[in-house]
Image 1: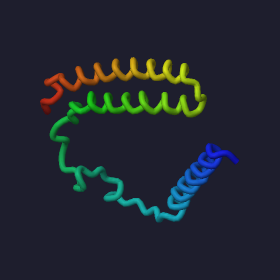
Image 2 (image 1 turned 120 degrees about the horizontal axis):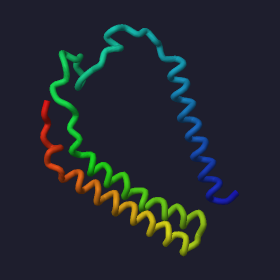
Image 3 (image 1 turned 180 degrees about the vertical axis):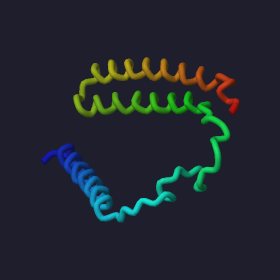
Image 4 (image 1 turned 45 degrees about the vertical axis):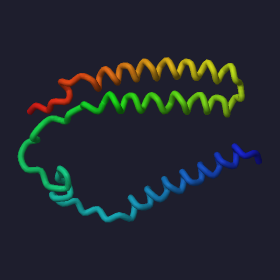
Length: 121
């Protein structure tokens, strides 16, 4: 058995154990819904009246930059490990880089929109 198969087998067994544990916990957990358990909570407290302000989305641009930069590094690395073809790895890295730069530029412009930083009700 080669190393990749052994690692895949270990991860598969761990994933199945995790799913089995969650499913078992769902089966044996008591279910007694009460009005208090079904209520929506705000910061650990029961809600009281309408929401004070809408959710501010000023951090969406930064999240977008983070979410696009990680795959731009991970996907070419995975392609190189799987296929061991330098030309395919470089092409994948260039495509990922272009997508990451475009998404990061959009995310940076979105994060700099100052009107999103003001919370109005």
